[in-house]
Length: 133
Image (cartoon, rainbow, N blue to C red):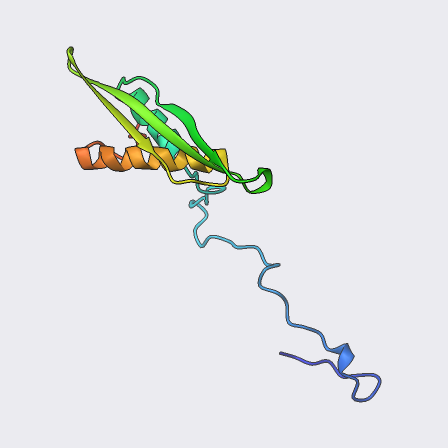
């Protein structure tokens, strides 16, 4: 850290701080590499919708099965269910009740995570294949 001479003779209020690292732009060492604007985060609910569409199953159904607490601290519990058609005659139905959450969106995601966990253990991919055909 470099200190500039004080004009008042010993006054410490005239120090100049070093330049901040936050104010300098981050540059790439090679000009051909481009940094994406930000990561795309898929929620468990959107992954489940895409997996069902990719596998030609019915869309998942999300139902609020429980609400508890006063209005300012209400918790929601959601149930997610899907129907998987395997072949022409067999149908498998999966239902999962998520953990209570303080928002409806995270409660639905919790239920979707449970179904995705079960599907992974059955051998299905957790995230849909994103390659273009």
